[in-house]
Length: 51
Figure 1: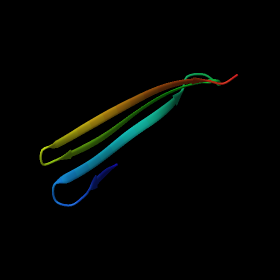
Figure 2: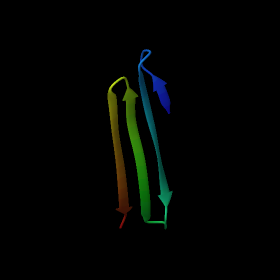
Figure 3: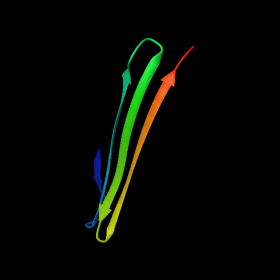
Figure 4: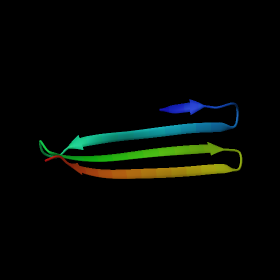
């Protein structure tokens, strides 16, 4: 998703989860903000096992 916040700021995010098995999931996500003199990025990874 990309949103415009005024004329000088863009927000973006994307992510997904993948079921590796019935009990294991891998997830990745990204968030970012870009604007005049501003650049902020973050990424997150997760691995979950249910038992």
